[in-house]
Image (tube, rainbow, N blue to C red):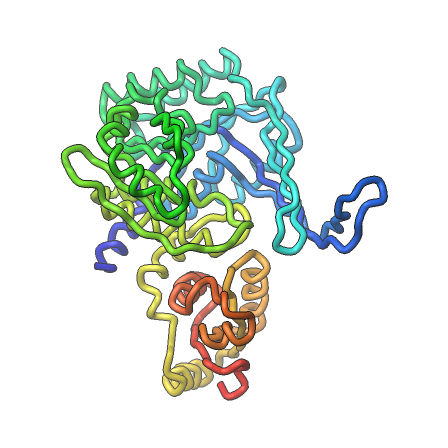
Length: 432
């Protein structure tokens, strides 16, 4: 079965995708808080690291590119410093920014998060959220008319921040009815897109509650049962062929006309610093559908792409290599130490320098990734030894690990810096 998924993922590189939606800049200010402010009883955060990454629809565009597709991205930003940072970040991911329009009257939407250790303390949001002006609306409509039928799929990422006006949505419907394309919608207000005739919609649980006017939202663990009975109504309200209703730790329900809903399951991950998993899900779902996959197969692939994100930190992306490794990660993992020694001996005979490191790597974050990249730079072959689940439990407590050994192997095997992965049951890797 995994070979079928890998074959679909391999097709991603042949696809051209058009993304339209609200561009944002996500800024992460990470530090430590060891003092209390004299002016008010609030912590003083000593900032150690600042990271700025594309967010919102821009994160969707980056995810699509990281998964292997060629991406055209349409949006409107301000003519400010934040817009420059966002464009630089998009260029660094290989995106063409020629369809990102600048408006002197707008401020680029920026979301700044302040964290101390693993604790998110506060988020500041700035930027223009009103509808774009008529001139920029006309330019966007012109770009849509030019590119809509030249691409393999279109992703609409609408956060309600003014890009997707009624006229823009209207022209999408006209173009879709002229010649049907794969169109996937991720929007806060899905009912506005009913007449577009899109392929799929991806609401999360809160968006489902709003769309269906549910007066008594279900508690955690009971959401899938509540939503299951609304399948046909969701398809009617969205006007789509499929609805992928995501519900966090309860997975997703995939609805289509005339069939029982198909459910995918996800593993709970306690990581308050993870963001953007919904964008990743939408991206992988779109690419799978555009590659000819069924909605069930597309949902499974999208679920696994989101799982990769949830084991990272901040607004992150899933690469095609990481997704491939998630489905077929066995090639890097060597459980038998004698087999590991044999492979290392072969590398040494070839004159290669071996680098060894170890750790739990339970919740993978950017610091882990940078550390492994630096370790790999010290030689030719990086061997990573992971603490087994029992070892982590002894070291970190009964509630750890959050991600079992199999999940950690899958994610870490996807990193290009890591050549071989093994594991050990002891508290330290000395015997290894």
